Length: 203
Image (cartoon, rainbow, N blue to C red; front, side, top):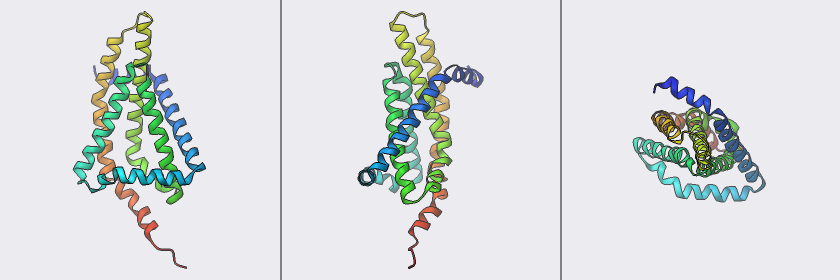
């Protein structure tokens, strides 16, 4: 099965991918709106994130890259393959990640600005987010086909699973590329914004 067949498969499930995009975007908006109503809660949440994940900043670039890559690959794989359980897992991955992005996005805009948020997400996010959302869409597709199988419909669940598994080689490639960019390029892009914020205001 070559890349053209993979593209054809993705086109055939574009409705499920669209569903993943809408669910993720809606959750991000919900997270942003919730954060805007309770900035104090956001500050507490961001402090907790810093306490739990701050150790990552102390890793060497190769180790940080490996952690980011494996974390995203794990989330994408379970969203895809565990979608066979009626699509519950991919839905949870979409909602949870969307809400977190919304909250963090609100905090970034309030503390540094919209341009910083775009600079922090765009370099790697333009690859990472579509890849993860496609995996979620595939998970929805598998969940739907599994349900049809239980209902006795004439569908090829095994073929759907094989098509999903074949996509994993692209998922690995794109998530690795995104991890490289997030580790090596994104910090360079956002550094001017951090330096600017650190400059004391003259009165």
